[in-house]
Length: 291
Length: 286
Image (cartoon, rainbow over all chains, first blue to last red; front, side, top):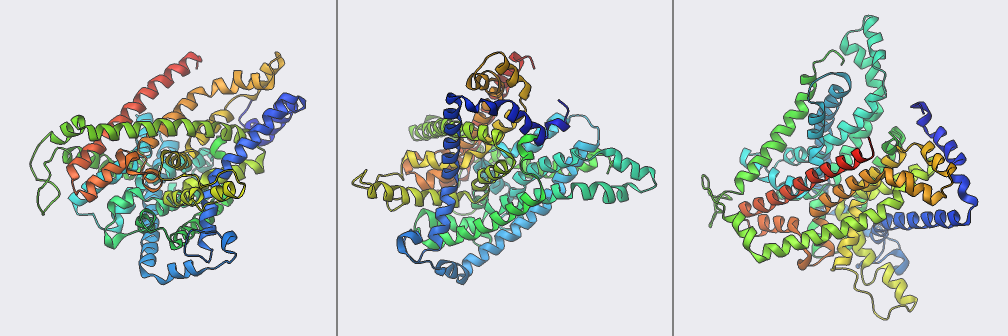
């Protein structure tokens, strides 16, 4: 089967011809509906916490009730969130750190991805594995190693300190996503532009860059979401001046659980969902499992 | 830029990793070998050298309890995660284009939102006044609310929820790589649909199931949010101990020691699984 046949159209035809024809058999009807049931239940379990978090945040109640229980919807907890400077400073810190993380990880991740897709060099396997390694290091280890090191070099207590730590997770993601989108661009297109007299920079800017831009943007948004929501490294690195939204939510969840936490969570869910939908528009998420 | 030398393109990435990942890890090992300070001023005694923290962790039954709690949670969570992830991966593999996109979004969303928010959501769902208990009470199935939080059950639910996207993506990718003609061949030779699934895609994706198990275990051994929000102190794994040692006891050297040991276990696991996976793949003749 050629690479082109592996695309969805061919696969679904295969499915219709192949496995789905088994539907007539009673045993496979049972198996299929069981699969639907299990998957549906699993998805419901995955989403239920987020849905209830949102519901609690818009309920007019001082305890953890949903509007179904109270019968009244209210945005008072969002008002409380917006009226408290502590939360607003946290939100602003979180956004600044996320933007710094995006900048660092897009520069580092994209350039490394270009080296892997466009250049020959020795030790590709080792370097590729090294770039992905931080993803598999427990966040607590990353947190305390960054804390001790940043304290030693005097970086501790700055927003950059947290952004650099977040970049350890964001770079491998940007690297992987950008590499995948670069692999889909024919290098001869750029070579053709060079042959027609374009300088290397111009050829890249006019040909390759526009083609991989959706991939870079998607990875930038992923980096943004990761940084916005990461809290274990932030917990180790944050000082009273550099609290992020998650580190402010943390003591609240541990001790006094009030619906204002749900509102703070609702804000992060809202930002995350919007960014994720934007990513969905930019790139085909299905490629994540079909490459 | 095709003309740019690779070392120039790689230098920002590798430079950052060297300075902010490799160096800090080495420094962490050094900090774990310092003596702690008894009073104020600094977090450890400069130029000191001691193996006391390692000796303490190895011999103290308190730390043995933490190691056991960590391992138990890791294994249970890995098992539940795989049980949930495999059907989801199969579902993702069989789904049509629109359903696939929606399912992927639903799987990614909890992973991409704040861990704490997800844990808080689990807490709300499992609480005495939460929807599950309300339904059970209203249906007359139980007289009193079931205690579903501050115990191992809640921690496993929470941690599974955090981890499940990774194995789903790993296994679904492997399933998509299975040649559909092999399945048809199995069917043509008389295998039923379930038998054909078992003989071809299931067996072919076993190496990635192993990889998925490893990734889950690595993450589960570093569990932090779920045990604190949903568990009780008896269930706290090593990650929580690192945090309390570092911040509540302000004992950086001991916190560093625990982190170094956690890292060592994870590295050993990753290496041994890599070896096993290579062996399985070779037995398939790949």
